[in-house]
Length: 416
Ligand SMILES: *Cc1c(COP(=O)(O)O)cnc(C)c1O
Image 1: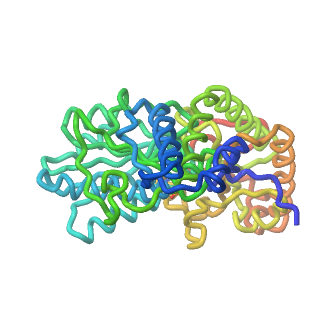
Image 2: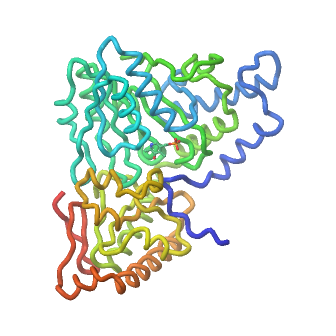
Image 3: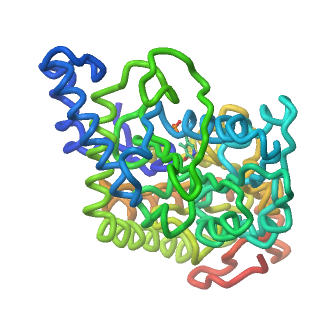
């Protein structure tokens, strides 16, 4: 079985060979438990964990003491939100988040609401952006935490993190950001941006699955987290359980590579993404690029191909690994909650594919994908009654979104 061209980099990424090489010894001779204080096996494991903690801290300008290792961004999001609500319950019980967050934030918000918290879910505009003024207006005397993602995993829109961080500081409210997609793609500085809690996942940035981190600010203000798990006291008791040493080493290496190579990598990714986008716009009519055209991840492209069902397009796209909507919710086969929140109709949302480029993609792959998508869209439209009817009438399907295209070669701005 050939696996095909991998363009599903928002779901997961290929571990960098340097990451795999760094992890390997910790599966072999250096297999010790980082909590074992009585022998070199333990010491070597602990050294590796200490090194990884600095590697993670350095990328976001944090202190290593402010980094907790977790099983990934899902756990980090859970711990940040529930842990901060519980730890700061003397202040209140109000949480503010947004409609386009990852399920590991939105479902936590729902769980918190069931447990009695007051939850405000802010809307977004047609490009998927949260308005900082709406965040400000939603803050009450009982607000404990604002949780707004740094970059969206479906449409790539960046959150106005610095603006929200500043206003949270002003109002004395904690600010959490899910940076699973942003880490290693855009520079993030927790001091400059006023972030108090930040979630990281290794496997979204060419590291291993099942490991991540949570940044927890220690001063100005000191975040008081309450743990979700109880046990052996690791990670200051905030996240007990034997540390995943090989995974943590992989996370550290992935983030060190990101820190050294992000500038060049992101530029190259944006070049590939723009090539993919231009290829589609040149070859395919009636498409909409979803998300913000300026404040966006360099590696994301989310496109609605009018009249073509996304699932059918996926099947027709033999040899291209992409996803329709979000991989995390694709089992539900419901239109994407992100596109819905942006005002995209269910019909158009169902024609959407998400492309996620990564470090190992090439121009030749991008060109091959443009070709295959263009051919598949053309074939599917030939047998789509809707497409044929629209063609006969000379109408077009337009929706809220950033760019749509009715004639090859000519993108133009649509109302957001
Ligand atoms: C992938 C992802 C997560 C979940 O991360 P895991 O490490 O897989 O648990 C959370 N938030 C966003 C934005 C993501 O893209």
